[in-house]
Image (tube, rainbow, N blue to C red; front, top):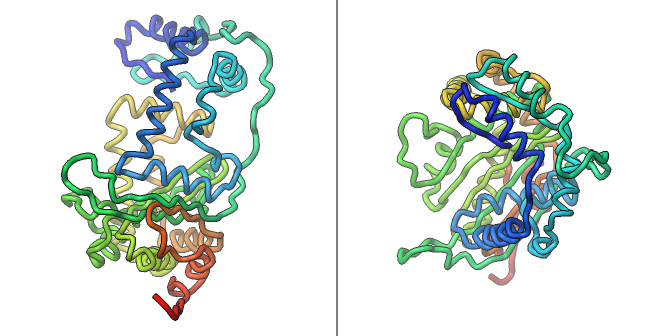
Length: 376
């Protein structure tokens, strides 16, 4: 995504600049060397930062879609950094920077004027990589597999300052939901909002989601849990609803069982008050975000690129209002029939086996099978 904020009088100049940047990047040797260094730094930073959420998101996708589509690495593997050169970048641009994959979006401009500028600067323009046809375009559809990805790591020294940071083990459990093109996309968005959650040190207050299930049932009842947050990732051909939790390594088994119980409860009774609260919070977040022009611009571009049309805010709000408790139960029940995806980071000596987590999510109460040890 390439974005410019400018006075509407300079629209022609701005579209010309965008066209130049997108279709005629110089890609000098110096720029490519700097980019390699920046990618290397980002990878090192990713492994050092106390917040493991980006790494866990990468791992849960890797577990859910093993060796295909969205399960492939989003971050550049270290061994590939040296392979980045002008030829590789031109090959990528040739395959993916094609007119059928592009949307020119504008907010606060006349539509006809924008079309006129697009014709002038984009139509018939020869890009820097030539006019050869795309050859290596991957059109494969996401195949959900489920599975587990573990990364044993010493998390006792992640503090960036003099104050010690507690050693935590991070677990993320996910199940396949649906794509953003399916009817159940809105019920899943409401379910994600209903689960909510966050860190145990949130200051609270209106709009913080302190009455969501992961606060009421998990963080408020189990003082030793540092985090419990729900996420919903949605794509054109699949989706993933997951919950991330963190706690002391000695309480990993108990933490996993708390999560599996919450997943089972998703398909249980839905209180009307909590459903209305989740719907209201989702609508308020949507409307608040769309007060910003850069967000409106991004929303227009993404929706048109993904669905060839744009749903207006009042249409989305009507869809959110129409969600009923049975929609949530149906969507959750359907999700629970799938194999789970599990990502685990930190000290994993007490982590239950994948088979035990799968058995808990297939049971009525979400309890892990009991294990008996002769020696502890």
